Length: 262
Image: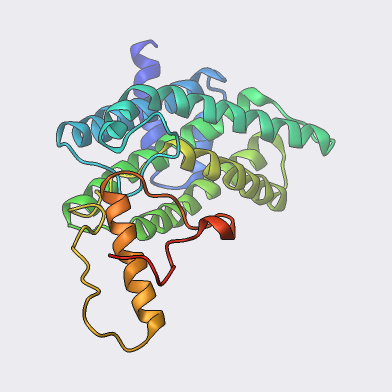
């Protein structure tokens, strides 16, 4: 990218923190989909280098284990630093194609190049802010991943505003349809991201509660004793890695039997 275009790119990026109208007018007439690709790639590299690499070097583990079985928690951030740029680009391309398809099926004019420019720059504007927010959340000592996730959805409202304005001014998409498209984007994109993406919130120290359980004392009821025995067995199973979720067929759920010994 020539130096003049690079300066213009940063100006458009920063204008996204001023108002949705400014960033969309800055995108008007810019090379498409090149600027959208550069924006999304910049966002992905920033996440990799400034979030996942430091977390991996600090030896942190995510609060929730990855859903993919071949990736352990202690390697999650290191692996994310490598594959996250590729995943974010593919994730973005898939959702852009989905928006383009929905507009075409609705009989409306659509240009996937412009969709990529608008959504790519939106991802950079919002993603760069979320990077700062995530580190502030971590450094302030907060640990709740649910609150962090909800805060991300709140900040995504700004991104929705940018894309709605962009779709209306560049593609002639009505505001209501732009909101619907953003809702579909979130409904499809968030579950896909949850499979691979893990936030910077560290797991609680100690992981699984391995405190010894003593069920020898007299308990108030037989049901309480059964629950205590079940917890003791669950703790031992978690400690040696043989824990299985209790939601299985009834004949397999023997951990609650009153005859089991602790």
